[in-house]
Structures are given as structure tokens and as C-alpha cells.
Length: 229
Image: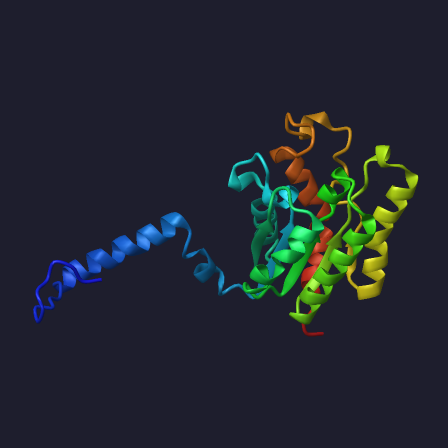
């Protein structure tokens, strides 16, 4: 935008001043993260993490969250992949479905779907959750993404019938859509108070590291899908 100039007096800055303005603009964009997608475009694979607070890294610095630790682990093992964090704290399966279109704009080649914990905590219908996850898998596969479905367990106080319907939904969807299933995203965490934040629900940085270590083999298997044989 041009300001403070009279009509017919369009001015140009000397080359060194134009470079200074450009450099300052680049630094600003980097500072606020707007160049992150550009920097990641060179990655061969793009792994979308569609989830809730467990993938969003609730209560943790960004570098300690699931997305950051998974990215670090995959990079250390030589994978050419950009991890796309689409975790939103408090999201249910319905919320994940509602915003999936925005996430698909990032053109993921692979995706880990981690949703359902908040459905169970709120006692929402397992049938409705299964329908929501079904539509999420349909849309991801239609977009060409290979999917790993991460399961959850329902609280015991909701009763056996609810537990069976809830936990069975992940197995049914895995079979229906022929996608990988990681049965329990929080495997190894229950009972480990030293790995949980003071809220009693979310993993701390060490807890996230345990989750990443446990799920890493399944994610590596996922990333092989679509490779030339």
C-alpha cells in the first residue's frame, strides 16, 4: 500500500533499502509461523494428525507435544515426512468431522485419526461416534490419504454395554475401511501418575514420549503405504 505520496509521484526505494524491507518481512513471517507450510512443501510425505487434546499437546510447550515429538522421532529415523498438527483440545468425533475439510487443504498423504476420548468422557452415543469416524475415514481415503485409526477405551463407570459398543466401533471401522488400527492410543499410561499432568487426564512430556515410542512402529508401517513396490 502506498501512503503519503501525491498523485504521479510513485517512488521506488534504492536496492539496498528494498532488500532491507524484504529481509524484515521474511523475519516477521518466520516469527509468526506463516512460512512453516512453505518450508514443509518439500517433504515427500505429509502426515496429518486429526485429533483432540492428546495430539494437540494440551498443557505442554509446543516442543513437548505429540506432533513435535513424533516429528523429531520420524526425522531421526530418516523419514522424509512433515507432521501436520490438526489436534484441537476438547474436540469430539463430530468436531473432527466438521473441520476435516480445512485439514484436507494441507493435502495430507497419510493420517493418524485420534478421536473419541471426549465422546466417551461426555457419555455421547457410541453409534454417533462410529458414524462420525466412518465419514472421516471416507473423506480421508477419497482425498488419497492412507490412514491409521487410533482407538480409545471407554471409562468403566459407563458400563459394559457402552464399553463394548464404543471400543468395538474402532475394530469395525478398521475392518470396513481396510485401514490400520492402533488399539489404544494411551497404551502404557494408565496407572502411571508420574507420566500424567496434575489434571489427572493428560500426559506430561515424558508421557508423550512413551506414547510416541509405542505408536512409532505403527506410524512407520503407515508411512510405507503408497510406496512403490
